Length: 133
Figure (cartoon, helix red, strand yellow):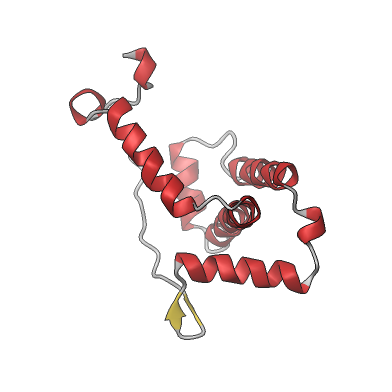
């Protein structure tokens, strides 16, 4: 069974679409108001990324394709999935700020590397890792 992807309408915050920079500022402000910088060392934030990623994964654990599709159609579950995705994003954005790593630049650089490792002529329609071809 093929899983169908669903496009979710962008949510608006204070009347405007939340941009990447807005998201960074939102996380920074939230953490600053709570004086959390003292707890947000890179190691702890990396642990948070993995912990929240595991919580996201747990929502899909042991489910076949049909059960996943059903999960996505349940009126409560997509919000739970979105919450866990947002938690992962929160920790990544905070880690980006604390370490001074620009996630936009990092993504562009990584896509360039991936283009070399996964050229279209070899990677199209294949899920093999570059060193398994």
